Length: 242
Ligand SMILES: Cc1cc2nc3c(=O)[nH]c(=O)nc-3n(C[C@H](O)[C@H](O)[C@H](O)COP(=O)(O)OP(=O)(O)OC[C@H]3O[C@@H](n4cnc5c(N)ncnc54)[C@H](O)[C@@H]3O)c2cc1C
Image (cartoon, rainbow, N blue to C red; front, side):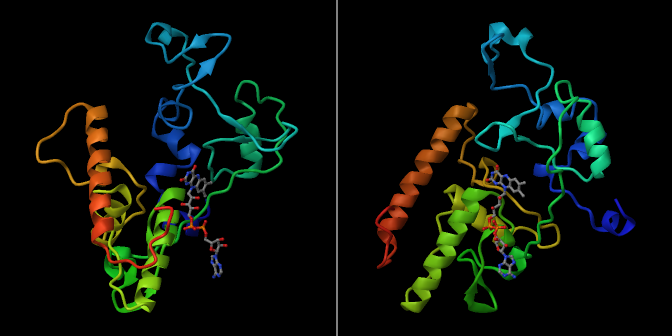
C-alpha cells in the first residue's frame, strides 16, 4: 500500500484482506475463508460425519459460478490489497488454479459510516434533526438483512412522522432491535460496524449453556416480544406481510 493508505487503513475484522489473514498465522486462513467444514464431496464422502473427519481437506477455496456457461468463477473470500501482478502470481500457486485466467482482480472496498452512537436515536432519526433519518451500512450496520431492516424502519418512521404518529423502536430482544440499539448506544470513541449477531442480544437472567437451546430461547423471546410490540404499536399503515 501507499503511505497515505497505510495511515488510514483500519480493517473490519469480519472481512479482512487475505494477505492480512495470512500474515496473522499459518493456520489463520483455514479457520477463515478457507475453512474446510460443512462440505460434501461425492468422491470422499460426507466430512460432516465425525467418523469421516480424517478425510476432511486441509483447506478449501470456494469458487462461486458467475456466468451461465460456467466459465467465470469468483474466488470467494479473497478481498485483497495485493497489486494485480502479485494477485495473478500468488493465486496461481493454489493447486488447480495454475492456469487460471484472471478477468477481474480483487480490490479493497472502503466503508464510510456515521458515528451513529453520537448522531442517531434507535428510531434511526438524527438526534438534532428529527425529520432526517438514516439507514443501511452508512449507519454502521453490516449485511443485507440489516440494510433491509434499517431501510424499512427508517421509511416506516418517516411515514409515522408525516402522519403525526410516534416513531417506532424495535424491541431490543429481536436481532434487528438489538442491532439498532447497539449502533445508537455503543461507545462513540470506538464505534465500528456491526453485523446482526447473538452476542448483542440482552442475556437471559440465568445462562443457558447449550447453544442450540439458547438460540431457540432467543428466537422464542424475540417472537413473543415482537408480537406484543406489534399489538401495542398504534401504527395505522402496518404492512400486511408483517
Ligand atoms: C464484496 C462484498 C461482499 C459482501 N457479502 C455479503 C454477504 O455475503 N452477506 C451480507 O449480508 N452482506 C454482504 N456484504 C455487505 C452488504 O453488501 C452491505 O452491507 C449492504 O449491501 C449494504 O446495503 P446499503 O443499501 O446500506 O448500501 P449499498 O448497497 O452500498 O447502497 C448504497 C447506494 O447508494 C449509492 N450512493 C452512494 N452515494 C450516493 C450519492 N451521493 N448519491 C446517490 N446515490 C449514492 C451507491 O451507489 C449505492 O447504490 C458484502 C459487501 C461487499 C463489499
